Length: 151
Image 1: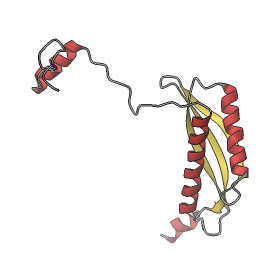
Image 2: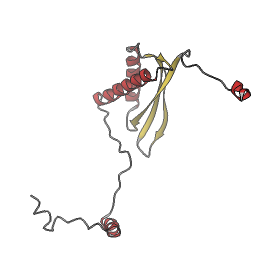
Image 3: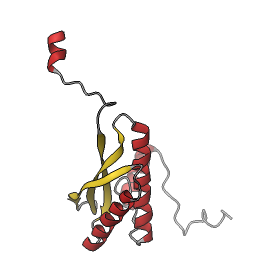
Image 4: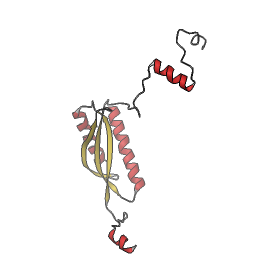
């Protein structure tokens, strides 16, 4: 057993330096390039104003465009001012940066909502077939009296 442990590297997080924290942002693919540059510049200014949480922005780049979902994944790597063993403080700083990005996107008018799954569109014929199979009655049509007696 000792020969296996000797070959493995042991990292003491307490004596380790500062961590690089990756932030992955999902932006709409319709967002203009200059808006993405402004967002990254705003994040750099935010990081410069938070010396107790961050040191500097190490890198910022587009990871992959996901055109099927109309999204661009932008990754921003930031050097944390906290040591690697201070997980709670790193998570708080990361959450604050995400809140800043959210507020910045709302203020700049780049609001978008992304459904957790694509919307399901069901034709009336398919709905009736599925409803019969599951024992669900078909929906009432507006011409029937079911809608008139609800108030």
